[in-house]
Image 1 (cartoon, rainbow, N blue to C red):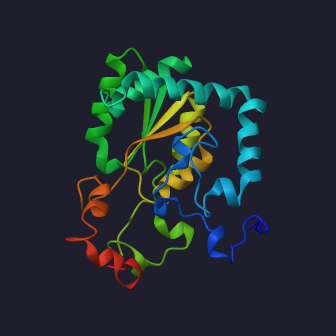
Image 2 (cartoon, rainbow, N blue to C red; image 1 turned 90 degrees about the vertical axis):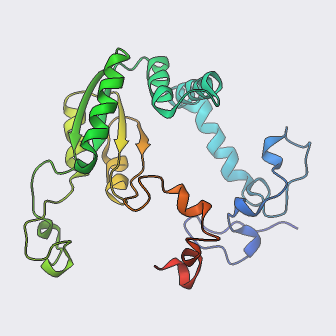
Length: 231
């Protein structure tokens, strides 16, 4: 049965058109096309033209094709052997990038310093900038005093746009995020002039290991699946 494709950006009314790959038990995408019948809800069945158009981007954009090529080579070279730190350096070298940028949370300055030292020992130039650059109070974006972590006190606004601008100013070729908050990282991705990867995803509760909440969502963190995931 064929489905009419909803307008892009619209919420599909037919459940079979919704993107939900985690429910798949077939994983036809791991086989050659046609070898394994995909389930009815597979994007290859519900949105084939979108995938065709996306795939065309690799043919049309040589820079994108180069990124994909070197990413695949990096994956194969260090598969289950290289740490993410090593893979970042390997990928940068394969791309010919010598100048890395680090956009880090001020609370992870020690981790940023450790990454800087490792990258520099690997022969790479590093520029790093913390999230509080600019020292503007959070009220400048409309936050009320009562909404602050410490109401009534000066709280500097995290400034991922400033971080992106500063790293662009000094000419970084590949930017590494270390512990930017949820939302702040989104802004950095949006404004970064250079490609971005993440080394540390912030999770203050779980020691910056956010996947632990998923592994324990059936036990210690089962509350995350109750009442819409609210704490």
